[in-house]
Image: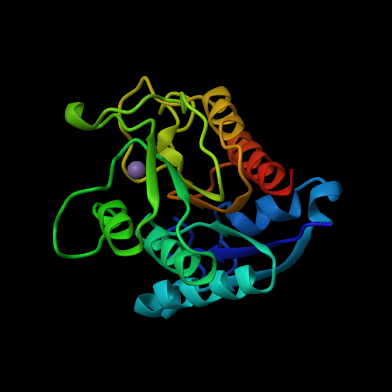
Length: 232
Ligand SMILES: [Mn+2]
């Protein structure tokens, strides 16, 4: 049975108390509500507290690397999108170059010398040689990408998903919403269906629940879909 290790990063995730979610909904609540059939596939959960601050990217890199070396599929939940640089780094170290499907309203590919959530895609592509496939990019006209993959991606792959990919009408709980039309859950399904090789890992980032907000069904649906895709 394939196993997944969940790595939760609540830094920048809109929660108040590291690791607990405080008074607002957070990843641990979503994980507790997962169907039993999926929870059976989860081999451990590591929560990296936001109090670790600037050490978080390195911890993510080591944690993802450990998963891959142990034959587990990592599922990174939370944090800002610059953390995908750390997952791309670990993937390169452990399994080599792969196809990264980057679903996001933003291209995050600014060619600037410093690494941030605006430039991580440029840095990760350049430094690690991964093949980069943008999906749903819409915030700048010269970097538009279709809301779903329109071709098959083969070979080992990774899904790097920003919740602002979704249309803000259906999912407003993000830090930097971009006017639609944005992606739909069906667009995400269609994109995953185009990923024909093994999906080695998934990042689901940039969910920022408002304090006191209910858990979003769409967050749960996205986590379930990601887990199913890794386990298929
Ligand atoms: Mn984004």
